[in-house]
Amino acid sequence: MTEDKKIVIEHGILDLIDKDGRVTQTELSRSLRVSIGLVNAYIKRLVNKGYVKVSNVKTSTIKYMLTPEGLAQKYHLTRSYMAHSLDYYRKIKVAVEHRIVRLKLEEVRTVVFVGSGEIAEIMYLYLGDTKIKLLEVFDDLQDGNEKMFFGYKVKPINELAEYIKNNNVDKILLNYFEEIEQIENTIKKNVSDINKIEARW
Image (cartoon, rainbow, N blue to C red):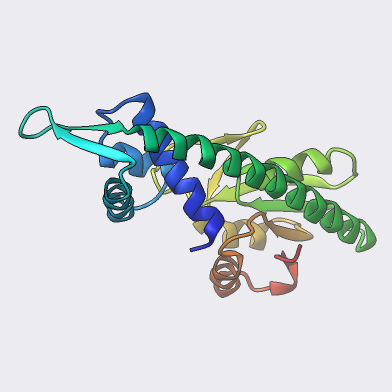
């Protein structure tokens, strides 16, 4: 795990505890999109460092409270988190600009997205300045809930191969930085024309 990811998790836990001391580890796990085991490990570490106090309200209910040191750490991490976020978005902007140039040079006309997060949103905004048409958006819909992306209904990633087989798509754009190789390898197993997959930034 990168240092930036650790900052995001620790900041998120301290921030959510500060807002509601009765927040559960399940709620923290869901909000931060990490496992309950990882949340538990972080809370133990924060307690050991003296940033968080734990008290039993009832036998089944735990209440967390930030100590003065915990509040100071939260503000310190907020600054780090903001700096990281600005740097991260600058990197995305540059990467997306490079990808758009390559797509134009290759005379790409139609694309589908794999991934519908912040990177995909920036990619979509940049596509608006080109003649490249976004056809569909695919993502890993783990919770089974319906998701929309700028008017597109996001489809489950397991439907991608069938869609590519039946439609004229120039490129499959993978909109991830982390774990992009793993996602690329999964897609390569199911898509016959691997030259359509664009994972480079």
